[in-house]
Image (tube, rainbow, N blue to C red; front, top):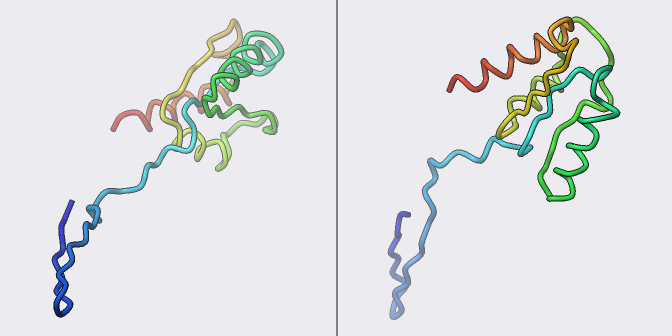
Length: 112
């Protein structure tokens, strides 16, 4: 913390200023859930998601995304702005290009 002293006639005052160089927190979510929807969305993943929300843990889950070959910008941003990722591996997880691309992006972001 930097302290700045100012003088205004008879009364002197000291103002504290926080460090300006501290970047804002980049996290938007506490947890990013990565999973194969067809395998676990309505079972394990939905129960895990509900439990995290009950504990007030801000969790990203891709409820609105559609099947596709590449992960979209919104999903990339969610991965990048999550404190940590939980990858739920299932029987068919590795057969999904979408899941594998998501996993690669998670690993790239965590190389910091």
